[in-house]
Image 1 (cartoon, each protein chain N blue to C red):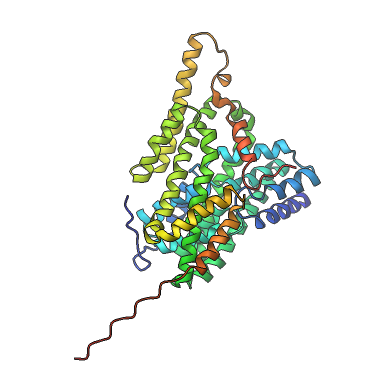
Image 2 (image 1 turned 60 degrees about the vertical axis):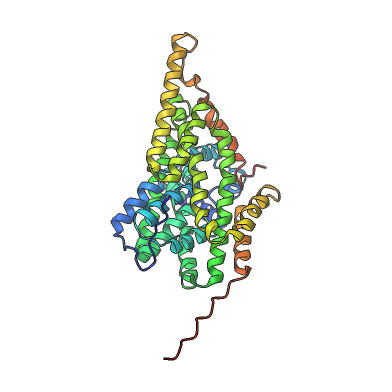
Length: 212
Length: 200
C-alpha cells in the first residue's frame, strides 16, 4: 500500500507539472530510475515504445510504467495520474467560456490553434522519417492523406486498411523469401521487425525525453 | 471539404451513453497522438453530430493544449463538460482513458512476444504510415478555418511557431503560451457603428 501511495504521488507530481504526454518523462526517470531504482532505463524505454505502438494518447506510458513497478495497483496509480490533471481544464473552460465572445479571447484561441497546427506538422516529420521506409508505406500515406482531407472514409477504416496492407505485404514478402530458401524464421524476415528499436530512438528525441 | 458546423444555439445535447460510445471508440483507436485523435473527434462531435459548435471546439482544443498532463484527455474532459457539464466530463474522461490503459497493460505483459513478432510489427508499420497522414490532415483541419478568417495572423503565427521550435528549441507549451499572449495583444478590429436610424 505504501509503495502504491508513493508511486501515485510521484506519477501525479510528474503529470501535473508537464504539459504534453511524454513531457513528464524526465521527472519519472529521476524518481523511479535514479532515486528509487524501481525500474531501469530499458523499462522506461520499453514503456515509451509501447505507447507508440498502441493507439490513443501517448501519456498512457505512465500506466505501463505503473504496471512495471507495482502490477495492477501500479497500473491504477498510472491511470489516476494520467487522468487527474485533465480535470483542471474544466476550470479553464468555465472561466474562458464566459468570455469566449470577447474579441481578444477569440484572438488568443485562434493564435493557439494556429501554433498547434504548425507544431503538429513538425511532429509528423520524425514520425514520417521512421515510418515511411519503403514504397508501400509511402504509398499508404499518399493515398490516406487525400481520403482524410476529403473526409470520404472513416479514420478507423484507413488505419485498419493500412495495417492490413502492410501485414499482407510482409506476408507476401516472407512467402517469396521462404520459397527461395533464404529464410527460416519469419521474425527476422521483415525490416519492420526492427521497428520498436527505431521507434524507441524516435521517442528518445521526443520533447521532454532527457536521458542523463 | 465540408465545414458545415452547428452554432452554439443549434447544437444537440447528447446522452451520457452516446458520449461514452463516441469517446471510447475514437479516443482509443486512433494512432498519431493526441492532436490526430482530436481531429477525428472533431469530425464526430462537431461535423457529424452537432454536440459542439466550431467556437466551442476551438475553445476546448486551445485550452486543452494549455492544461497540465495529457492534452487528449483534457480535450475529452472539456468536450464532455461543454456537452453535459460534470457528468459528461467524467464519462468522457473515463471512456477516453480506461480502454487504452488496459490495452497498454496488455501490451506491457506480452511485450516480448509482440516485440519479436514480424506480423505485429508489419501491421504496426502500416498503422504508423497512416498516422503520418492523419497528423498532416489534422494540421490542415485545425488551421483551415483560421487561415481563411485571419490570414495575416496565420502568416505570422504559423512560421513563427515552427521557427521557435526548430531554431530556438522551445517546448510546445512555451510556444503555445507565447501564441496566446500574441493573440491577446493583437489589434482588435472595432465593430462598425450601426447606421443612424432615419426618423420617420
